[in-house]
Length: 223
Image 1: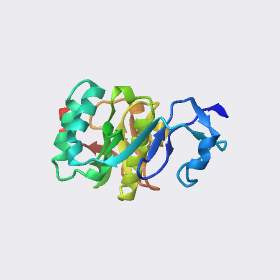
Image 2 (image 1 turned 30 degrees about the vertical axis):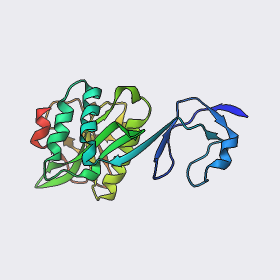
Image 3 (image 1 turned 90 degrees about the vertical axis):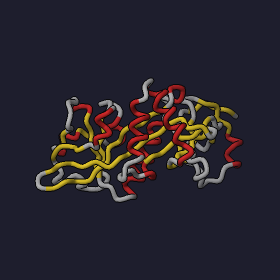
Image 4 (image 1 turned 60 degrees about the horizontal axis):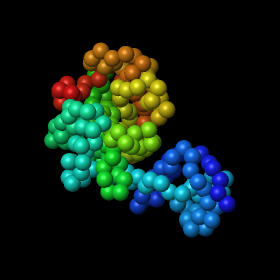
């Protein structure tokens, strides 16, 4: 029996962490017995034919060229790619927060969280900047970027970071829990609409008493 069913990206296993399906796909109940129940969340007791297996992993030295190609293709310029290359050479760079998305061993997406400071009253608060994030054009609008963001936020939380800052689309980042940074009294060091400057707390009161201006490293000024 085949049915039509809508499903989003689902975490599967450590070997191939995510499986992505198009919005409508064929489903065969006969596949149910072939998959261990701990490997996936099953909707309406049916399993979906696998279309794309996406692995999310920290970058390695062998990924540098692929990461450069992803950013260049996504932005149609090399500014973001050069930014990553420069940040990678700094002492503050955290390789565990530089994640790649792989499909059939090819890098199709990349995200970076980089340490920044919030110049609050009489102190500086540690935070992270989400920038850049890219997915090559043919894989955009397929949840790859969403998966990268969720995975990196989770890793940042496990590493003990309390917040993340991002400049981005007003309708995109709130779906991950981001709120206007102005809610926390946080402002950017450059002109950007209030509706496009966001912050998220990775733990309760993670931005308490951290109202102030973000201090980006000089490398960001060159993009």
